[in-house]
Image (tube, rainbow, N blue to C red; front, side, top):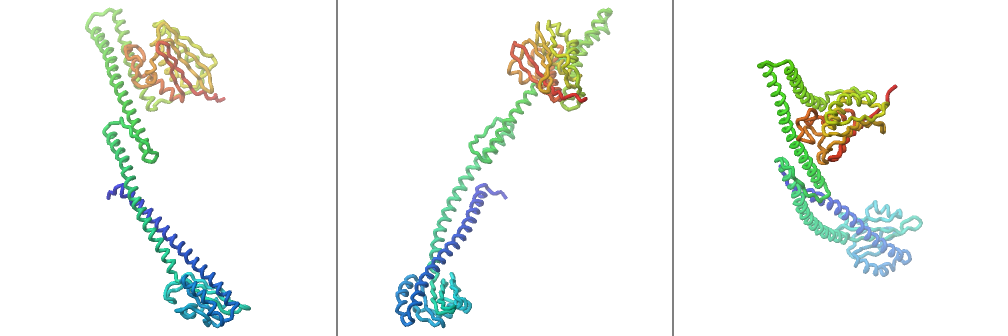
Length: 475
């Protein structure tokens, strides 16, 4: 069964209010009764002590005359009394006073005979015509009862006071219930409207509209939920933008790959048909075979780059790391890339201490640096490419700096992404043309538990900085 939030809130508020009222009214009623009865008993005890003062110093013959002022005073206070002697005979009493045997039971008379004061805040209604408070004060001489006084006052006045208090309490309850109803109605509408906005925003999210921001000015649980919702929508929007961006690059990548595969395949097909259908000299055949080989290598590079990226991304590569001189890697790179650098009139400059060591997988580190250095050569003409190495804080720091055309600031943050190419127009180059090289570099550096960073300015060169952990060599 579906219960509206208003009724849930109202029931909870009313329940708490009624429980509080019942507890408070019960405690307050008992407290007021105790105070009223105690004040009544204290008043009766005070008058009783005054009566006993006269009883002790006056002869019995004068008691009736002396007690008349007390009769007048106590009658206005609705207090009845009688004085008795050591035998229990009544010396003086007001009119309509019941016998003392009726008021004092054997147990009470026995306590009174021992000199104990008898105080009963509420006497048994079966022994009186109405509920009353009773005070009995004895007079003792040499340990024997010589008389005393009994005072009785109805508790009707206390009950009236409690009834009056309850009437005020009923008014307070009615006002509290009214306020509770209004407050519950206001709060329920307020919170339901906030929840309704969340539901509407959720429906938009479900329909694929992530450009949503809930206004949130309330620091409570629903407000926190609204903040979380805004953050979720923002992240979903960023994820969708990222997916759209990757999808766009994937399509561009497929188009580039199709074009790159089509060109060499067409070339190879034409060369093969020409070799099979025409008289070709040995020199021409050698040129054809060299061209076919170059085009085949070009296709293999594309396939290998994709395979490398997928293996790294799916953790199918295991690194074989060990300590070895960094200059060994630089020398191999210089040997492999010097010819490519010379084609663009670039210089490869190695700046590293021969004693400096690095802790890495030899083959994968060469792959990292070759990719970076090829990019540096690709975008540098008549310039210099520096390969540097140094030791800093238990890390081996490797820098590859060029004096080339650099990269625009808005492109720097995208260079590690798959399919991304900083210069999209350079698609027909023999290296790094598919937008996978730097993405593979980033993955390999991460596998080494290292960090790679890049700084670049347009037309002012680029610097790649790689930091690899260098643990101490075990003896």
